Amino acid sequence: MNIFIMRHGQSAPEASSDALRPLTEQGRDETCLMTQWLVPQVPGFDRVLVSPYLRAKQTWEQIADKIPASQVEWCEELTPNADPDIAASLLMAYAEINEAGNLLVVSHMPLVGFLVESLCPPLMAPIFVTAGIAKITLRPGQGADFNWLEGPHNIRPHYEHYYQKCRSLG
Image (tube, rainbow, N blue to C red; front, side, top):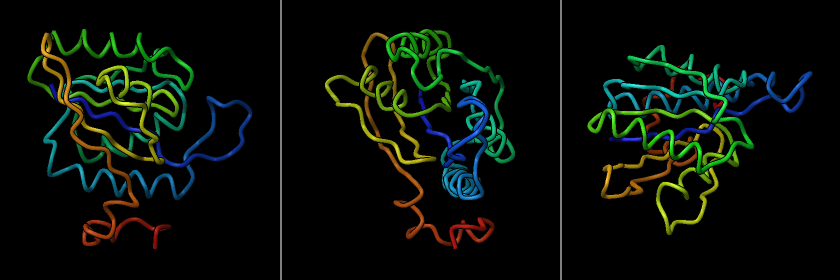
């Protein structure tokens, strides 16, 4: 199973609660960039697990316009301070059900970094930029391979032709 772990795009610094912080225009554009880059690599997701926080939902909504998903779930186990071992166990359980699929997780720092660390020991938790995406290949019973971690700042110079629709990034 291919697991794509994504941090939401940039969000507003304040709202009435952390759960209600929306994406900024830059956050929408970061998500646009990463989605355009991901489209040729992933024909669709078998399952998408999304934090119930507004910025994560908005990030998924943008991706959903370009990459279809068979199932989408809002998961309390993916909030910013959730337990990464519980979240990793959830992903491994899905991998056992669908060994050859594509799974997308949309969540937050610090959880996304700790989730990579939990799935791929002995890696230390990487820092995800906003809208950053990591790819992990999980083989139940055999472990996981960390494939890559990319963000808008890394891919934009190499894929400029994809990003004409993204406004605030210039």
